[in-house]
Image 1 (cartoon, rainbow, N blue to C red):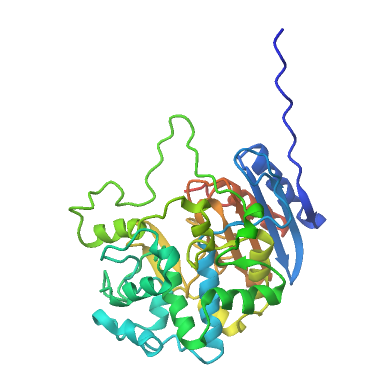
Image 2 (cartoon, helix red, strand yellow):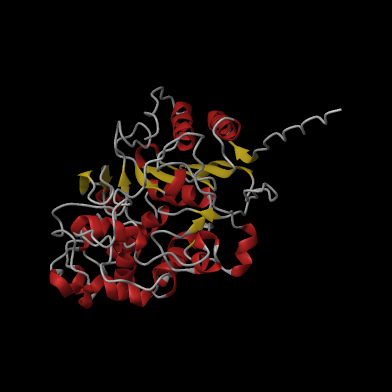
Length: 404
């Protein structure tokens, strides 16, 4: 007699959801039942009130540890938005002028013809410094801040600063963080914690402690469907490093110099590092609270917030070789390509594999989704479904284009 298949355990969504946003809860549940979510959380803050705070699923690929209220997960490039906020707080304090040269605050940055590069060019991914050319020790980005900022100060720009833009995937946190350190005397991880997260009662950690490991979700890489061909994330991935030159070498070095440390993104070295553009850990509640505070005029002044969401970079990205749009450190909505809902002035940041946070001042809201099962790209069917459900709850009927 054949044993029956074990019954599938139904997904249990924990937390709370204002009845106005029941559609968000339903879309979140469907992410598990229809879109392959493993463990995730979603949150919405409106007028400073947390109206959606939901979590479900498992912290680990083996599905042995349930996602809890205090689970933290990699939020990847959402750290770029927090690095921008930490920098903009120095602008509000009168310590930094975005029109002034970076070298005013960081004299060593003036090397290799960079003496006149303004702070705003650095913040908008226009400085030509997405990669280091000289070979660096594997894992050094996780262990030596000084090595990284010295290498970036010495680096000749890969293009004329200000003339074009390209995603500074793993360098923008060091670049902005060193400006913050020079003018404030504090490390950017401490500015983010002490000046932004803690006053709002949330966690946004650029470097976690060993005691945090048990509540840290395991990151699971994207799993292609049978027969699916996934294009490489790096446009230069197929090139030979021994013969690549110019922008092709730059694109290779974005992700390969320095080489990854042993153990990858679940290692203690990765989790502990001060790598603000890429390795922060947080949860949806925190990201939504931070962007919600920004939406109602907190953290930085409303005037500076609105200056930061003006488009500084737009069009074909020299690193990614596809369209991107940036303000001062934030990704800006790209209607029809990479929207953040129906408001064309919404801004925020996507993270690796579907993670995202967005700020919509016109609707006075902050929204976030975090997960531990990677998708193919920034935009993913899961975050698209949640964004669409959010704005349908606010009375909008239009939906986002399919994932890219």
